[in-house]
Image (cartoon, rainbow, N blue to C red; front, side, top):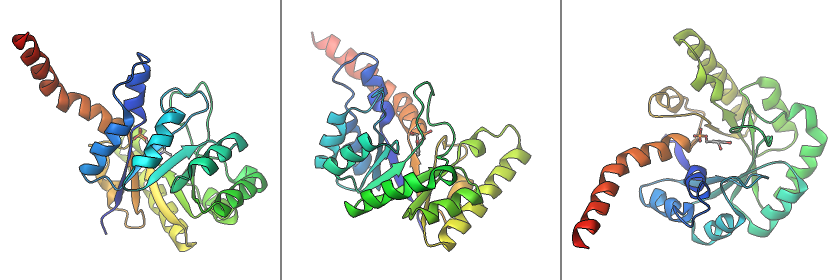
Length: 240
Ligand code: PXP
């Protein structure tokens, strides 16, 4: 089974926000990703709004042709936003202001009651809910208990493994977690830190039906697009 690819366009917005400019627009990037075959567009509307803005979310809701996956903190403020915009899927992620990116999965096991209530609320609004968790069996069981439709397994430790043995152990944790999640009837995605060198062993885990990848794709787009971008500027200068 071919896994679905969710393209995370947050870092297109990072580039825009670096200059507080109007481009590059993550909405345009999302359309191009879809035309290239992406199955889903993923964005993280962070509390500090460091990359994706509410404007992006609202426009993407109108323009997205595939499915829109909104990563968000498990807060009432964000539930309100989700209720207004109605993404196809909400992925609950932990969020700390000072972190560079999402570090570690959501601790579902330690906040079961609050999460169960929040997830019920989202599902009442006909929004599918996933929780972003470490590949840990206690967290998988907790995700099932709070009635999550899906889990997304955090692949960060696998991606950051310093040697082959460590990488293999982390891969096995992903395999076990994916098997446990699907056995409990939940859908299973994976993501974080996946790139062109490390993605294939994760693709081989048949229980995983979706990958969400952002940084590596946007980073490659900058390099594969640079030659053309320089040529376009030179052509314009020659014509002046
Ligand atoms: N999945 C989740 C839940 C994330 O928080 C992120 C990072 O925003 C990703 C996938 C994508 O990670 P990366 O940008 O490293 O590919």
